[in-house]
Length: 249
Image (cartoon, rainbow, N blue to C red; front, side, top):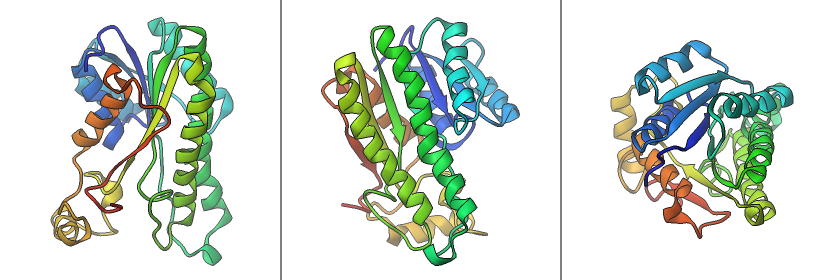
């Protein structure tokens, strides 16, 4: 899986899975552009990946104008866009549906679902006009595959990403744009830690909570993203690949 000469855009690229995906694409030869709202964190991630291999662009994927500028900036600076990984996402405060604040609901759907739609809208438009490309959306095993009490907004948003991915894949495969999703379960990021929980305590909890006995490493998720973005998966269209150690098996 080599990406020599390819330009790869990653939203939510400053940390966690997005950062690991950036490292993996850069090692495979791509020029990586990390997008997000925290410019300082983005600059740190670019420095970590290495000079000449990565760039960053400030973007708010919930804002239509900002999402459009994000893609315009990437293509203007680097001459194209071949792969996009739409990874930006938030959990939001947990609460039962009857107690869920409408603002939390709006905020989670704005980032997790509308943000993927707006990013894809402009990514696809460029790719369609320039010979095609591949897109991988980061969903979750919570949503279409599994539900948990208190996470209605998150689950609804990620289920929406799964359905949006499949629909967009059907809409645009004839345009040469191939679209899939990954749905990680608990991964080695702060999002998998309970409030106040240490990594050691999480590891003990995962020994019984996950059939595989542990969280996924971010590099394992990144490897799956690269496979879906590569020619090795050329006949995979509209798939949502679950990476959760057997939780939803």
